[in-house]
Length: 114
Image 1 (cartoon, one colour):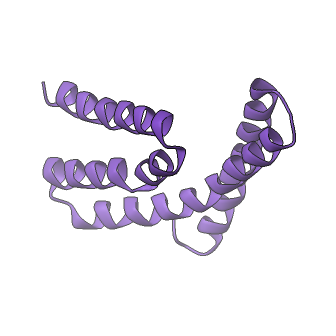
Image 2: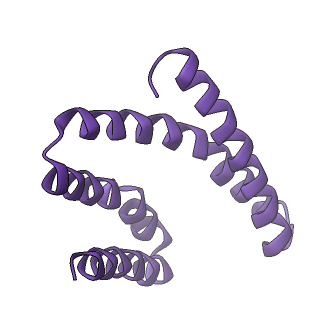
């Protein structure tokens, strides 16, 4: 039951951000950029385990990978504004994000963050 509640809350957040983005891309972008899902995940991890070290590790890892995800969004926006179709731009953005995640993960490991 707990998993279903977590999934429902997370789904509602995504649906609200999507609807808000349809009405106002700026406000939708702001809402989806807020660490709402991450904050909920941190709360649930702490509630489920009580392990503050696991929470701290998750927060640091999340930060490293958020930085790694930035190329995906930049590439997607640039390609869409340059006239590329949505699907090719999305695929290129996903590829850039994948490379960003790999790089962020390696840097995070080298620095002892993750």
